[in-house]
Image: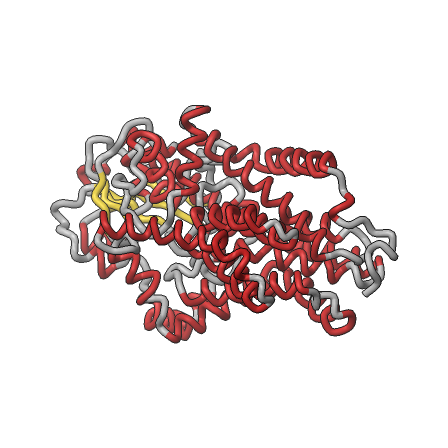
Amino acid sequence: MIAARARGVRTHHEIRAGTYLFLFFAFLVILFAGHFSYLKLPFFWDELGQFVPAALDILHENAWIPHSTVPNVHPPGVMTYLAGVWRVFGYSIAATRSAMLLLATFGLLFTFLLAVRLSEGLAGIPALFAVLLLLCDPLFYTQAMMAQLDMPAMVFCLMALVLFFEDRHRACALACTAAVLSKETSVLLPLVFTLVLFRERRLKEHALVYAIPFVTLCVWLLALWGVTGTPFGNRGFEHYNVTYSLNPIRVVFAFLRRIYYLFFDNFRWVGTVVIVLSWRRFHIYSSRAWSVTMLFAGAHVILVSLLGGAELERYLLPVLPIFYIAVAAGLSTVPQWIRNVGLLSICGGLITGLFVNSVFPFPYEDNLAMADFVGLQQAAAQYLETNQKDKTIYTAWPLTAALRRSEYGYVQHPLKTKETTDLRYSTLAKLDPNAVEVLVMYSRTWVPKWSVLQVSMVDRFLAKFYEYEPQMTAEQCKSILGLVPVNRWTQRGQWIEVFAKPSVAQDQVTGAVTPDSPTGGN
């Protein structure tokens, strides 16, 4: 590889601080402009079920271990940040989403800085290419505005990598600590740094500073253990995210799912081809910086394949910018016309993935399906508040949480709810038919007519290893619980439907609603 100075390429040391400041504000404007229409979007799933109530406990009572939601192993760093923002600007959904977008802007900046470091000596502008690809990514787009943990963990992991390669180890250790306080799985990064320094026989001079993230995590786990009786916060969380997920079949399936999403889905396969060819032909990923970065990326993919029963794609956020930096570096080794075609292909595939859903079941938060989900739940909540406010509403979490507290953007006044563990036939059939007057069913899993779940072999596999079971049907609601449909909303393959006893439903049946009917949401 020809040296950067010989090729006339500026290194990161030569770029003025004012340039970084300009880039930060440029990224900030782009992010806020792209998310402006969603700044008041009501909270989604784990936001309202876990992280926002935990942050509200800190805001109102300085309760680091939440009590208005079930505590778990996640450290309080992001929730503390949100509580601080609310103390200054007041609590609102817009303030929350703006606070997360500000963090995401730093994520773009540190992606740029890390790309500059890893791409030294390469032609073109791979650092900006990496940022462009991340901006187009549907997962980053949704997570950038959501009050969840993985995007902040991504930000501080990128920051720590940049500082480590600058040999600024005290600052790097503090960034690692911030990453660990964002999400406990980030402890993997300081462990990687410790192993690298040990191999290079430099650990002795930096051992104390890199002990800070581990000590911080241990203090949190001990505090959690003392209050809840388990370092995981609750036994259910421990079982689902450790014992359940460590089944060998689930581990293999989770790893394959990680590989597919990171290297193939949404036209990322084009980038994967570029990486493989550049690796073989030009050996551009052979530097110390790339070795350390890829060691962390590989270890992180393995870790989130072993742990985490939900197998959510957002767990991959800390390594997603690294993939795009590798793609951008690889594109710098090919002729310009191939570079342009490759870049446009990947960007086009990523942007398409923001709007077009997969044939596979996927978390709605991976793209704008989350906005469809929120819009449907908001429409149903407004209907229930108007027509069923005196009834106890049976449904599954997270809709129960949305109906119980007005802070989440769904109702103006709390409604009475009875939470079911899920909406499966085997669960709902155990309810007392005389007690259920109103039931809300909704599409918790992505199952369109052309889904792979329509394949019997896939259905049997998921039933055996993931306890998958279809939800109760409208006919079963009537025959088992004596309920009739009252109202239904659909949006781009998702749906939500209200059922009630005939006496309650009288004069409220509105008839069928056409697909993609207005939901009242964003």
